[in-house]
Each structure stands twice: as structure tokens, then as C-alpha cells.
Amino acid sequence: MNPATTVAADPPVGGRRSLHGWRIVAALAVTQTVGYGTLYYTFAVLLQPMAATLHASTTTVTGALTASILAGAVMAVPVGRWLDRHGGRALMTAGSVAATGLLVAWSQVRTVAQLYAVLIGVGLTSAMVLYESAFAVVVSWFDPQQRAKALLTITIVAGFASAVFLPLTGALVQRYGWQHALLILAALHGVLTVPLHGLVVRRAPHLTTARQRDGASRSAVVRAALHDSRFWALGVAFVAHGAAMTAMTVHLVGFLTSRGHPVTFAATVAGLLGVLSVTGRLVLTGAQRRIRITTVVAVIYTVQAAAALTLLAIGGSRAGAVTGVVAFGLGFGISSLASPALLADRYGTIAYASIAGILAVPITLARAGAPLGAAALHTVGGYAPVLTAIGVACLIAATGIATRASAPPPVPDPHAVDDDQAAGADPQQALVFADALPDEPGAAAQSKR
Picture 1: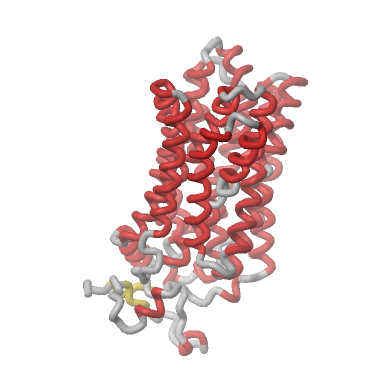
Picture 2: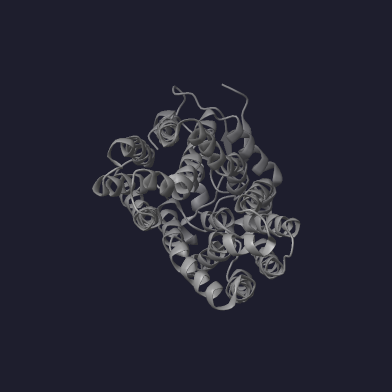
């Protein structure tokens, strides 16, 4: 057995199922919807008018979005560390103020260089206010049983961001022009997100103690995760899946039109992905009550792989196209729920944001690069290698989710609190972090988690 490192255990979490915890969930459901709607989805509507105003190609303008995504990856680790040390209130409030200002600045750009600078700033602030930060706040407030419901609530509401803000932005652009549309969206963003983050988001009560603020404890948990082969298996899974989802999003309409479908039909079918992402999240949350979450996720990823590969054969008919997209779309949004659930359950909550931030870097890079890689494959061999690569990536993701799924965590029962502590014993109780072997006392019980 490797030398053990003694660190603080997560305290009891049942008491955090409070009314204020659910107020935070309600607030974040609103801010995530508005945040994604204004900071991300509006770009698709603004692309053509921006290119015309800036006298640039759509490819050049699209590069600004890629730069924005990459900037978010740069911020993932420092944002995670901040969240673990200080909570989300100050970070998310400051990020909302900055993002509102950047939306105003976006409306005033006159050159491509200015556009890139502003969208890099949008990427940096997005890392402060969107899902990764919101999930870190929620994970710290709820126990494992309530956590899934809280995360589901946020992702279901925010899942409709595109359905709300794409037509809203289109209407604003048509009536006022893209610059004035951005000013209106900036006002909407500032009015809703700044006060909700500033007045409602709070640090979970158990994270205000000196024990939970201790950097050595967090560092020990992060080291345990980085030395855990299961963490890297999950990393491979979510990177592969993120790349597959982004590639499919970008190239699905093109594939369907290449099979002879009208653009309107192709766009409508592709739009099912956003709606089905909500369905998939509901399926995952309901199924995990009876079936191990890793099994559910691996099965859904496998179904997606089959759907991507089958689309090559059946995508020429309308029924086949709809069937394939529906099967693929069921897994479209489940990673956003599966990732926080698996990480928090395996490594606890005191270093969750740091660990999630480390994992977010390669995932974000994969999402940024996948459309370009898929475009290169399309240039070489059409859509067959693109959908084949997407299918293989989903199979890799399923394998990564299932790899060592039953292995004991390097943090033996990160949520455990013994009877003495629950009865009011010394809160400085320690938990030993070690590489538990199957024949160690308690390891068999851990393997059943």
C-alpha cells in the first residue's frame, strides 16, 4: 500500500438541503439560460451581419469564436482553484459585470482585431459565470441524492437557451441591426445576472470553516485524483464525447443536405439535438436511481455510436434521418450531468472545482478543435469518415466511462462521517487518502459504490 496522506473528510451534507440551496438553483437556472443565450448562442445569428460590416469572411469571423473557446480553457484551472477557496459569489458577480461590459464593447467593434479581442474577453468571463462555475456552487450545497435533482433543474432550464435566444436575437437584429441588438442583450444580461449572482449565490456553510479552507487538504485531494487512473479514464471519455458532440453539431446539417434533404428539413432535424438533450438528461436522472450511473452513461454513448454509424446507411430517407438524429440526440446533454456527479462522488466536494477545472481544459480544447478536424476529414473523403470518426469517438467515450468503474476511489468514501462526528465529536476528524487495495478492510464495500 502506498504511503497515506491524512486530509479532512467532507462533513455531513444532509443539512445543506436548505431552502436557500434551492434559491441558488433557481437563480443559476436563470443566469445560465441568459448567459449561454447572450454570450454563446447569439454568435450564430450575428455571424453574417458582422462579417458584412467588418468586410471579412465568415471563416475569419468564426475564428473569433474559436479564440473565445480557447480563452475559456485557459481560465478553467484558476477559476476552479478560486471557487474551492472562496466560493462563487464574488467570482460570478464580477464575471457577470465584466461580461455585460464586453457585450457593450462587442457592439462597438469596427475591425476584426477588435472582434477577436472582445471575444477572447467573453471567453475568459464565460469561464467565470457559466456551467463549470455554477456546477461547482451547486455541488458544494447538496448531498449526492439531491445533487442530481439540482443539477438537472439547472440544465433543463438552460437547455432552452438556444430556443429562446436564437429567435430573440434574430428578431432584434432584423429590427435594430446587430450592434443595437447586442446593446439590448447586454442590458438584459446585466439586469438579470449581476443581482442574482451577487445577492443569491452564497458559499455553502460547511465551506466557511478553517478546515475546509485549508489548502493542504484540497491539494491532497487533487493529487489523489491526478494519481488515479480512473480520473484519466474519465478524462478520455469526456474529451472524446465532447469532440463528437461538437463535430456533429457543426456538420449535421451539411451531412443531411448532402443526402438530398432540403435545408429547411435538415435544419429542423438538427434542431432536435437541443430538445433531445433535455430528454437525455431526464432519462439519465431517472435511470440512475435504479442502475449505476456509469452503466447508463456507457449504454447511451454506445447508442450514440451506433446512431452515427447507422446514419450513413439510413440518412437518405426522412424517417431514417429523424431516427438516427433522435438516437444520437438522447446523449447530447448527459455529460454535463454525468461529469459533476462522477467527480463529486469519487473525490468529494472540497476540491471539486479544482479537479473539474483540470478536466475542463482538454475537453474545451477538443471541442474547439473537433470541427476543424472533421472539416479536414470531409475534405479527404466526404461525410463518411466524419460520421465514422464521431461513432468511434463515442465508443471510446463509452469505454472510458466503463473502465475501472467499480474500482475503490483514492478517497475512501469521501462523504463518510462516523457516528462520533455525527454526534458532535471533534470536527477535525481526518480521513486517510490512500490507494485502497481490494483486500484491505472496507475496500469491498467501496467497490460497490
